[in-house]
Length: 511
RNA sequence: GGCCCGUUCGUCUAGGGGUUAGGACGCAUCCCUUUCACGGAUGAAACACGGGUUCGAUUCCCGUACGGGCUACCA
Image 1 (cartoon, rainbow, N blue to C red):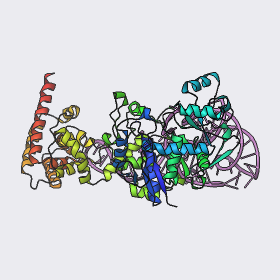
Image 2 (cartoon, rainbow, N blue to C red):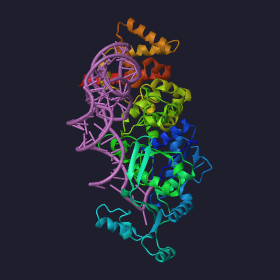
Image 3 (tube, chains in turn orange, cyan):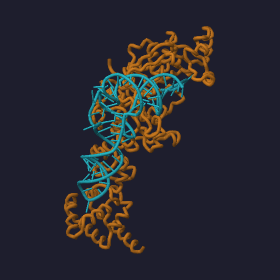
Image 4 (cartoon, rainbow, N blue to C red):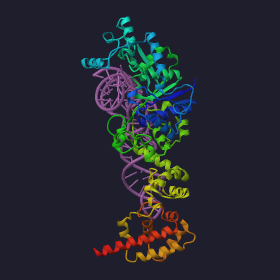
């Protein structure tokens, strides 16, 4: 039997990073098994529907390279429609079938009535012990039920859970899990608005779409008992998918699972892409916009709750597909470790080809108004890639490779600038103007010879050149920068440094 | 409260009846480099607790504690 898995998010807003990990694990499993990865949209709650969320989900998957084989959007497939709101009639039909089979019933209790029962009774549960005292087709006379249904009065269809049954699940990650049906409530399957709840839609769709494995978050484990009962009720138990419940992703510090609000709280992204919500409070910065490479996000997420069985840490998508196994998924929740995410990104930037990095830097450079060639961006990439964590660092930390120095490290300049320094720098400028060829190694040799001839020390001169070029004591090798920037620019910056140095000298004398 | 799941360095984790309990991030020190990084080396750092079982438990069993999830006409 072929492997078919689905990622089934709700379009209620931006796709949380935990959801992304679920998608990733489903994708990896499908690809490894030569199976099919399906994107299904679970939009059965009309109240929580957020326009744009579905497009966001699709764009996120595409950015990460987790392209569905079937699903909403333009992914195709012959098991559609893949959006649950487009399948409304199907669920209705199956809900009725379950009623006919005696595994479900009509209930007329209003939400207000139920709320009141919950107020009155601690731990009120709508189930075998209480259903007889409520308003449903199990207790109402037949004709009364028909009358109510025909009158158009609102009703729901509930699952009839028989007591004293054991429900045994063999979870691929957790092993044997058992539930007692007497503790289960009669879940609503079809809501008063005619839409199914997750439970019904999920079972019907997984069955119809021939899903072989359900890989989803741990929050679904308790309701899996109901799902098994539904498969039994429909007579589909033989083809019931296998379950694997993933551990949750926890907050970096403190208690509880990672929430969307934690992004702002801890100053880090918890969504793949930025999301523009109704309010600032509901708007978030994504990994992409922070300057993460998708491969780095994938690698980070893959290892958050799964391990390859050996000491490897760096995996591209193909390697992940190859190494992935459900058995190696951890049981315990994993804290979101942003430092590690940053480390992965740094690693991927370091390892990336310069021209690939250049294509990532391009929009950032354009945004700053830097008019430079692709070749120059590639040069900058090469110079800076071992000193950055995020993509924007290339144009921010390395801004002096695109525009004049804005800030000079004045403490350092003061330390190095003395009475005769201006003259030395002017001579260096001449040297730079005449150096042949204008190339890093020979330039360095020429400057070092100059230093020696003048009876100076490298420490007297090299920091000045660095200051002239970058204004800061950080950055790429001095002569690499000098060559990247070009002879004229270097000479110009030496002039500016003389101005800065002399200014500093005179103000120091004056004070 | 009830039900279910979990618990190895600060974090992600490997391991599994007898190990110097391994790796990675982060942290510290040193080396490289007259910059910053990168890289390299070294170091500090963990089996939640109590009972069993056993010659021997971090590993198996049972409790306890702690953490998490669910407990909606939300997913």
